[in-house]
Length: 127
Image (cartoon, rainbow, N blue to C red; front, side, top):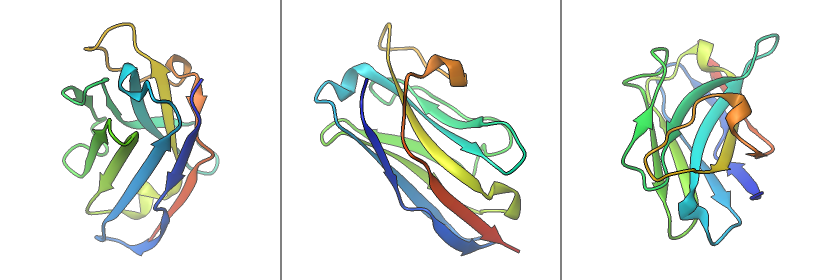
């Protein structure tokens, strides 16, 4: 298990950008694959970005591809989500998630794949 703390959420207008950050507690952070998920009211939690241990492989669903970028700094133990061209439908609570990777290449995209979660940060995009 690793403790995760998100920051950077807020209220923005459509078309604006936000950068979320997630700080991890473990010194073995480089062995963890990371993901960003979001959950809007009345909807299921969904993945918006994922990255492997070393940052060389990423995944984005079509809904955010070209607008969101995930990156990580293994020293210090931080993963970021750069969100550009935000839309009202991006409004949700955003969660950072981590799991110990079975190999350095794996990217995990399912909620059940992750064992550690942050408390979430609210992102609200007004039209």
